[in-house]
Length: 262
Image (cartoon, rainbow, N blue to C red; front, side, top):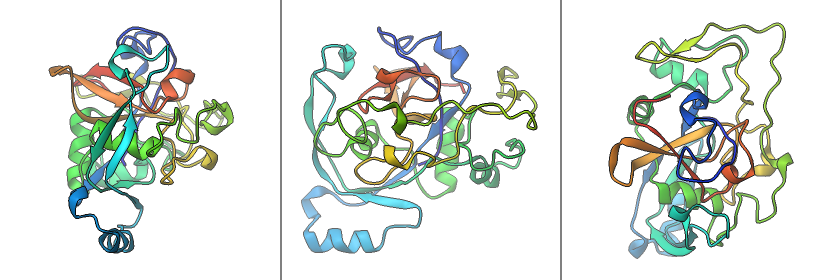
């Protein structure tokens, strides 16, 4: 994985988790994955070998079918109905990329005091993809992200079907002794001011997915591959973020942002 952030629930296509998402998408994150083998060749012995060879900080997600999307009455139209999808085996990071990790790739990335273990934020899609390539990985597809987040049984959240706010990172209080300069994107737009409201990666272990991935519901939004409805100006985010509501944390939910936004 890599990193991300945001959330709140509305309806309608994205503007749908609104507040006017451009104003809220100040903190985004990414998970980088590495596809390995086709399910056709994933014999039990090969899967055992792949598990033993799992890179540090990642987990292997076995290939094969899983339930994607949802038939929930209040699910957005582009998530309906629940259906079976199948993907190859892949590795995915267990946690979002931190500020300190991203700083190794981009020394100009600001790491405010005390925020090294927080998800890297104010990152464009292209910067996220570049980080993943630098790390010898790539961003996950939507299907890969969704299977890593919810397993095979079509659960609504990474931990199951019942909403539990205690399993999602809460908005962090701004400590009085921390300050940080405004963060600006490549166009000079201000993305956020002051200390981040994110939590350190993995702060809420009880919210982990069936494969052990943390913060796949809440903390920071995460970029995934692809364009929304083929529109090169619209990219896709998954996972919700602090400040967003329950619907944004559903494992099938998505948000849409401009290709160059942070």
